[in-house]
Length: 378
Image (tube, rainbow, N blue to C red; front, top):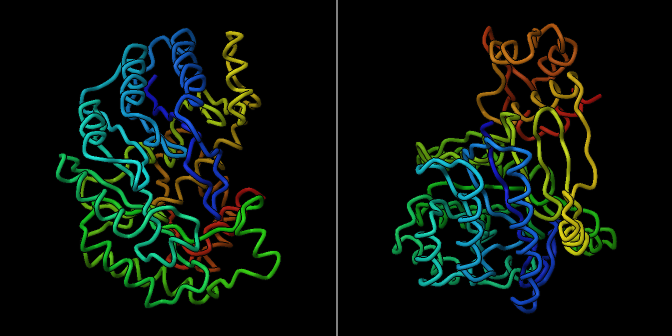
């Protein structure tokens, strides 16, 4: 079985004001060691469940994996190689926040086989970084990026969030212009979403968060797509832009609804038509593995209809959309016959476009993608 492997490290220095990821502030590295031991144990357990697992990609996410010593990350990757079949040219990504990396750590990560770095910049304006609860500065971002280039990383992604509180169009444009001057290989551009349980959501409910209008958000997104295209970036997924040959291979596994294995607290997996999720709390996760059990909290075997709907929703995220031929090859059914009512309605609303080969989101559909997806779910 060919699959992508996701490894979750739920540790951060602090919790950002907008973040609802499964992450927890880490005071001492020693506090993380029982979790790392459990993570390694879960990897080993899967050799019995997937004896011929061939990894196409590995993605280390969080949290902030690079808050940990590079040696721990190296050891984790070695255990992956010992228990799965791997390719020497496979994509291995690690998420990193500025301030958690230095030249020595970058050298160890590169020698460990990590060949793609995803830096959580979020903004290149210090006032905006402070508003989000980020603990780094613009200078930290640029220093980390330049050091990574000097060490030899030739595939670097930058994460940027837009539609921030009180953010103007000019301020957003300045950030994107500066990002392009750095010349990253990939850019992930996300509009701010308010998630329940975060400080931003609380402040918004209290009327303390002044957010840009939907019209301004739309203008920002439209401008960014045009500007990045002029600078050589292909807009290949709703929130992702890449230079030629630098698309994220790991994320494409998700968007193509292909098998993946999630290791770690709260990680999700999709194997053999079965989707399941681990216990989110690290302590419960550790306890299950200490008993020699898979730390799975919930799961379901997806029906054919549900697998088709998920394939449509995930596929529409990609700029190329969904091929009629690929859909029929996978499900032995015609996409335009199974979902003709939804497709025709969305085409009439100018949210989808279709031709003889595929369906795709229009530009307006890109901005209203969640509405489009709900039509297929309903």
